[in-house]
Length: 67
Image 1 (cartoon, one colour):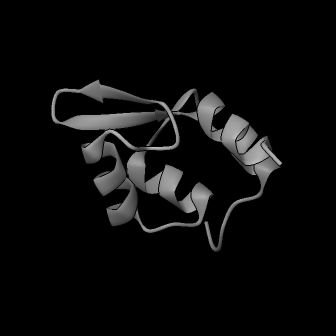
Image 2: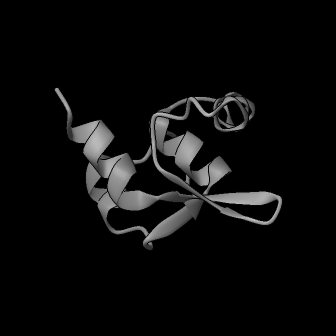
Image 3: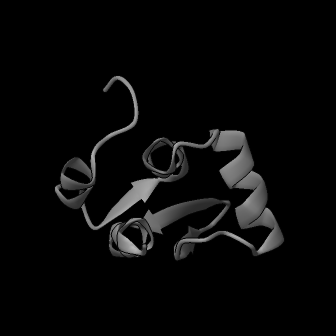
């Protein structure tokens, strides 16, 4: 994938996505999103799996749809 994905492309993503993929959708660096998750300040819902986190795609879509 090149560039920031469109909202329509994001809607077609699986139910959860990786932090790097979600960061791409938000147009921010993955390191910044990792830091937000670590501080509990991520603008999207995440699900912890051990030491990893997944981003709930529906929360990403909801955030991007907000005017």
